[in-house]
Amino acid sequence: AQTVTQSQPEMSVQEAETVTLSCTYDTSENNYYLFWYKQPPSRQMILVIRQEAYKQQNATENRFSVNFQKAAKSFSLKISDSQLGDTAMYFCAFMSLNYGGSQGNLIFGKGTKLSVKP
Amino acid sequence: KAGVTQTPRYLIKTRGQQVTLSCSPISGHRSVSWYQQTPGQGLQFLFEYFSETQRNKGNFPGRFSGRQFSNSRSEMNVSTLELGDSALYLCASSLASSGHHSNEQFFGPGTRLTVL
Image: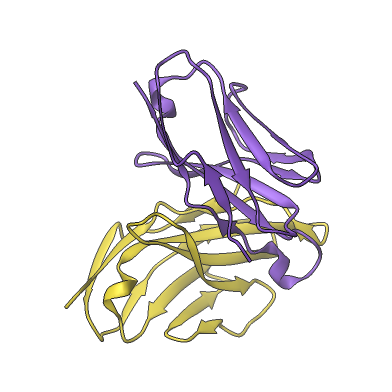
């Protein structure tokens, strides 16, 4: 069974600084996706960034980037130039791909509560 | 496009009752997944429906059930409610066809269920 571990329950960062959130996962599969989701206090879950396991290049989305280390099963999220609106719970998630299609479920870590301070 | 909608947003029930939650996916999305979110257990997968068929199921008791209609709208039902069923229930939809980005799941705002 796959597991996702986020070892930092809470983190804080000053506005405009950079912060890195950690995530490790365990799987015996070779084809999968990894995601970072953001859940602001209003509770709507939003996709921040995705990474296909077969891609060696790390995904980037504006101020958000990942460091994907497949052999180490590590998938950290770096937020550059932190903004007050980045304050939220951040969840790392794993999705297995079977038979060329989606397995349809995400396996989430417990989350990291990020506070951006002015 | 309208996002994923869930109704009702809030529910208060008592132990032993049953409850039905509804989820309308993004237009064109054929897959609907349900998750339970609690402070203790975090986010846990309940089940996924695709083309009116349950395609995948998490580790929840049979009191939790669901269905999907021909228009892809989905409902989940919890019977004989227990205090521990108090949670935020999230629904997510995806295209679920072949292709890289079809696996992205778009979440609704959730239904907050309180069992007294």
